[in-house]
Image (cartoon, rainbow, N blue to C red):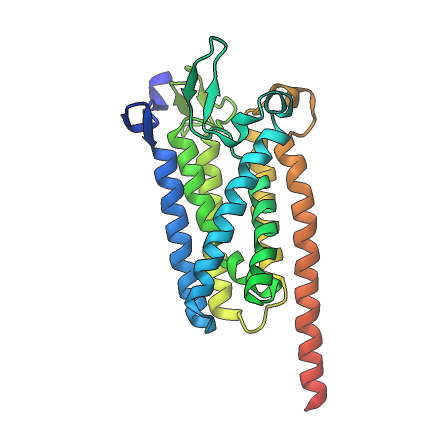
Length: 283
């Protein structure tokens, strides 16, 4: 029966030169960033925004997101280890007990921290460019799911963030982990984010003049983190302490984002209804 499942044993490294490696995860992450920037360039053009603003936004966003993802993993999932080894938070290496150093790359990135870091960076971008933060959030929300598609594909290439055992015919045996068929949770998330991205693009094209003032931002938060919350049920816990929890850390961290998303969605809908009412009244 085990031959009926998908066997996965890809080496995460594409090439390794003098200890420095190019990995599929890194390649997919960069591809996702470039693809997202291309979509945002199209959106900025439709909105009549200056191209140089997108350059600034890209710089702020990448710095904020990467720092947030790294700090989020270190502080949410492995705080005791990284507080004892603070240099490993900011350096892509592991200090060995024998005094040596192993180049590991930044293995450990949390999407929840990435969102928080991105929002902080966006605040400074808005102050720098004098662009309304809420309007910018709505534009970014349209393209946000696309990056998630590539990040989760990178996790699949790495055989990480694996699912729980399954007997489903699409179960994947991650041979680098064990010989057990598992849910390909990374692909579930990647497909979910692709669907969300498609929905957001459709709504932007069809109703961007109607839904503003945080509607798109609220909707994408709700959709992404509800998907994340649900898919966590078929994921293996990332750290040991989660085994004693009724819901894991990823689900706990998703709840505030869902609540915030609902708040922005309601605000955006109320603003639209208020504008519509005033326009009718003025007629």
